Length: 476
Image (cartoon, rainbow, N blue to C red; front, side, top):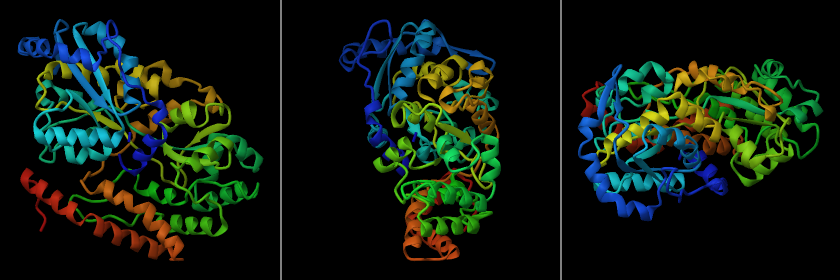
């Protein structure tokens, strides 16, 4: 999920989870070498694609007899997800063979950008991380999915994610959402209990409903010992105010002032002064170790982090973790998420659409992937499955999926721009610079605004030109 700075670091730390597909046969997943041998048959099979398209309730269904070879690309653990859902896809489309080409997040997007610019070399179905959505939704190098009836799916997807897929002129839809990242607070129930704090999620919600309550809890955790901290870095609490990347309005005016922002920054200042945060990046090896041994008590992050805890960070931590709402009224945030696209250069567009629509727009596809890698579906019908009422033993029997589904359903759409990720990158540096220099909360906020304006100047000019090209810019 995720090429903003957070995702790049996550990828680096979780490379041990990377699995490169290299099998063939009944699985429907082919080696790179076997793909070379079958490329000619792929092209010939796609030549009759027009007759393989059937419309059902507005959505184009690809005939199950279609024969083709397609390449799907992305980053871990997307490959694990696709492998988990491949049996269902193969049952529906037995003659479409799929090769998975996966690398780290940054390399994947660099390769995608290069191949789109060159007009050749792109996979038939590449993943796109949410950080890049404003860039790719206007790209003529990607296929418009509307001819496949994609717009008929509008009510089936989380509105927050769906709106991000629409081009600025409102005429094209070049991405389909895969997952969403409803954001919650992961906390160590055992550490909270030792600190005399409540451990039930509803009681934790009450305690942390104000910034004063957050500071109270942080002080209680740190009272356990010098090597006990509430959070890895307090600046991430400020990031929560901007977690939906809603930095700009439609006039491209920077929206820095937020309800409760000064109270939030004052809490962070006090935390740092009292040593209540560990003062390390939340994706560092030091932080990972501290999550596992209980030295850090809380992690505000997207729901997918639960999979990281179980599989890599703290596999022996069952019963030690709980999930609560975000603190101090910051509920309703998204962290991460990815999309699938079909490049215009693909010679197998109908087969690519068959793959995209099965994986992302069916309950079977989405839930098979969710159970494998914890990528929370952006596809709303998936939530009707009983698995979302699951009492997760890792989280003490808590029905975490019900909480995340409720949060996902209520995410409000925001205005997305090319500047958002760059603006986000200024939070950590600005807040920590302000803390080091002893600045006040107001001064830190002003510093953040200045740094964003400087860092996004050229991107803003590009965004304005994009809007002009789309015929929707009415600013100066």
